Length: 130
Image 1 (cartoon, rainbow, N blue to C red):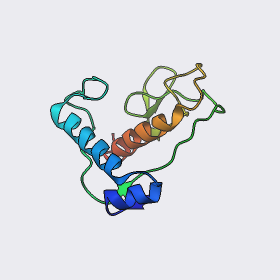
Image 2 (cartoon, rainbow, N blue to C red; image 1 turned 120 degrees about the vertical axis):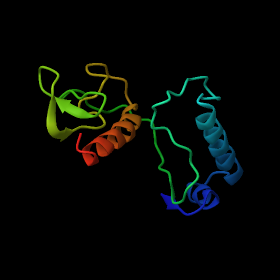
Image 3 (cartoon, one colour; image 1 turned 180 degrees about the vertical axis):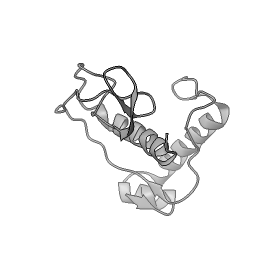
Image 4 (cartoon, one colour; image 1 turned 60 degrees about the horizontal axis):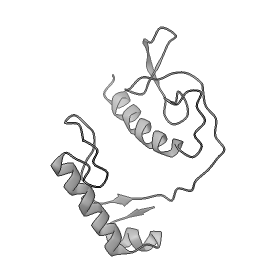
């Protein structure tokens, strides 16, 4: 879903606009402070975390799931697919379950975050030619 305002995004999601606004305010305060104020996690100085303040705003509904697959090629922290010796294969990137850091562990329903995180990492590195 996409919206030009936080209030419109909340309406499209069928949730409270005030709750979404307050959640975004809390997130932005955490990014500014360099610490996740809700869960107490440190935010590293070089992290790609960014404040949420510029339209358009995006959201998607995520539902728990138990069916997924694991395995395939391995990837590094830059989302590059690596060969059996750990060397990146130029121009080849992976996201989500493909090359998952979870490897042989079946955790069910956790790969959406991996898709989003490594999809962004792959896109940034591919665009930069790294």
